[in-house]
Amino acid sequence: MKLAKRMSRLGTETAFEVLAKARALEAKGKHIVHLEIGEPDFDTPAHVIDEGVKALTSGFTHYSPSAGILELRQSIARCAGQKRGLFFDPDQVVVTPGGKPIMFFILLALAEAGDEVIYPNPGFPIYESMINFVGATPVPIPLREERQFRFDVDELASKITPRTRVLILNSPQNPTGGVLTRSDVASIAELAVRHNLTVLSDEIYSEILYEGEHVSIATFPGMAERTIILDGFSKTYAMTGWRLGYGIMPIELAPQITRLVTNSVSCTATFIQKAGIAALEGPMDKVTQMVEEFRVRRQVIVDGLNAIPRLRCANPAGAFYVFPYVGDVGLDCRAFADYLLNEAGVATLSGTSFGKYGEGYLRLSYANSVANIQTALDRIDSAVRKLSK
Image (cartoon, rainbow, N blue to C red):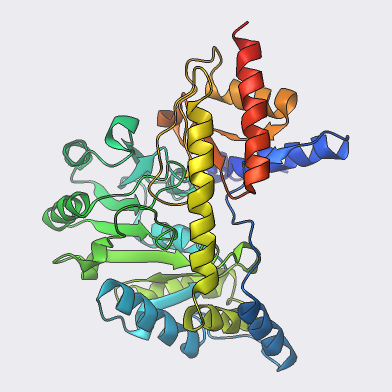
């Protein structure tokens, strides 16, 4: 069977590949500590599950409007607006099965051959994959440890050309845990307005913060009409398997993105949308508890990694990942990740899984128990010491 040429431009998310390798090793009897997959290890809050079950048994098992049921879009518009100090119309909201479709649909709608899209690197790998797939040119902006993995705004300005169409932001950031400051975002907003750029602002980790504040670029002058906010339920409410995300966008763009939903997935499961309303409108105590537990785990893993010879680890300000430098262990980061999986029984991701500027780093998710994190640290320490002999 001959594949279309565009398939050669499609990347992947390495976390799922490493997870499959780890599961295969477990099937052979090897114990693996999973630090590779980016999902909270907490259960979805009970009131959200209850609402989903109630919706199922109440007949919410049929098609919904492609953009999402009005009740959920109203809730998203209200809650997202209150959080950011903005007003959103429900007609600006498009609901999708997970957050990835928003990335895909926005790039399909706005970028084509000859256009350039600037994106963070290291960054979520689907950004670069989708830019390539739609035929546009990916332009990486490096995120460096010496800047706490934040944009260098002057460097960003130097990347903008007359062909730049879209700028992608992600704060708090995957894989580094970096968070843009208010000053950073203000400067980026000025550039976007000056150069007439559309910004796709991935704010999926906005509720998982330990330091500073979450600042949405949509709140700055001239940005509401040129920003698409990507958000969802997977991280904040531990709902990864439910597949529920959304975009908030200029009202004239929403019907175009809705047409892409209609042409691809038709709609998002209605009973899941009902559960999403319960998540937004219900108590946040479980979310607060989860973030505080992540804060404890962050300290354990950062301190533990910094105690291992030849490693260093910055303290992430948000999300639930660390991005330690491992460039002094004597292996490139991909080989070191393979070594840790096969020899030490610790599943991690190489920094280059997130782009070329991730060389020398690993991503570790601390969405795991303190006991398992400590086991992983002990194994990594032993593995590094073996390499140095």
